[in-house]
Image (tube, rainbow, N blue to C red; front, side, top):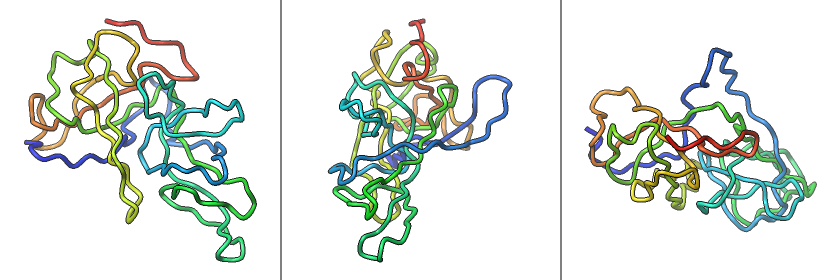
Length: 196
């Protein structure tokens, strides 16, 4: 029984369809000095500045690009040596002014995420959900983003759609903090999914 809240962000599960799941990541620019932490497992989107940089997809209106899985930047405190970190520390300045984020941007990727409350079997392919963004861990870089169970709506204005349950011992629909499999209901590289 998933009776305790231990959110871990969006964790890659599988790829929908019969194509191979490479689990590959694409590189997107992070604005040098971006004042927001980006944690491993956070949803991201393109910034509103039309400059190709990524930011946290924190609002329900955000059109997701994918999920953030780390940063590459040059540390000015270490003579510009390259750093690969599981999260982007807020207000960091890369020595070369071009930090990069590693993003799973596949619109057919599914993810596991923990609900911040109970999710039922009746939610599968029936409702859309937002995420609850909480501060992640600066120790291990992991996100603490969860599925906002209270945002349930029968429309495609939210970020996520439940497609199943994570098959692990003790995890069942109706648990206090259900771990579910989701996909993006809207994605920058795909057309919106129609409501069921």
